[in-house]
Image 1: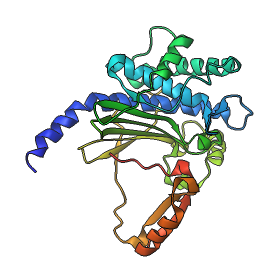
Image 2: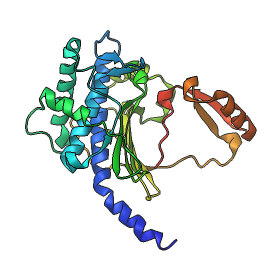
Image 3: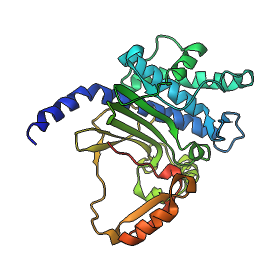
Length: 304
C-alpha cells in the first residue's frame, strides 16, 4: 500500500493543469448552453436539426464542441490533443444550413470572448467560419486503449435541453484506457434542494419574476473529480459579470451514507432503450430497494 502513495501524489500533480482547464471550459460551455436554451425554449426555432438516427442536435451542441475543442487545442497544442465527440459538420455545411452555421459561429465567438472571466485566454480576433468548422471537425478521434484522449458530450440529454429541462455538459480525460479526470456541468441543476421536485420550465418562469440578486433562484453547477484523489467536488456556476474563483467556492460532495437497502432508492431511465427494465426490476426486488423511473437527462452517472 505504501508504494502506491507516491504514485498517486505524482498522478494528481500531473493532472492538475488538465483538471483546471477542463473545469474552466465546462463552466464556459454551461453559460453558453444557458443562453442558447433561454432563446430556444418556447420558440419555433430553426436551431434544432435531426441527425441520421433522428436524435436532435442544436446550436448548443455544435457551439460547445467548437468552444471546448478550440480551448483544449490552444492550451495543450492541436497536435497533442485527441478529442472524441459526436457532432460532425456535414449538416452545418449544407447550403440550406447557412443561417444555422452563422448562429453557431456567433455563439462560439460570444462564448470565447468571455474566456478571461473563466481564467482562460480568448482569441486575438473573432474566429472565422472555417476555423469554427475546423474546431468541430478536430473532435474526430477514435480514441483507443493507448495515449491520452479527451471525451466530450457537448449536450448530454438534447431532448431535455430542447424542452427546457435537465441536461449536462460532460468532459473526461482518458489516459491509457483509464479515466483520470471527469467534469460534469449541469446548467439547470438548482442549488436549492427544495427546487429539485419542480419541472425546470416552472423553475425558469418563477426565476424571471424574482430579483436577480436573490440566491433563492441560483442554478447550475459543475462537478469534478480526479483519479486517485478519493474526492469529488461541486462548484456553483458564475452569475452575471462575476469571475470564476476556482477552486475557492467548490464544496466536497459525497454519495449517500445510507447502508440499509430498505432506505435506498434505485433510479432507472424511463426509456426502455436505455435499460433492461425486467432485469433491473428483479434485481431491485431481490435486495429490497425502492424504485423510481427517471427521464434520461436526470440519470447522470459520474465515476472517476
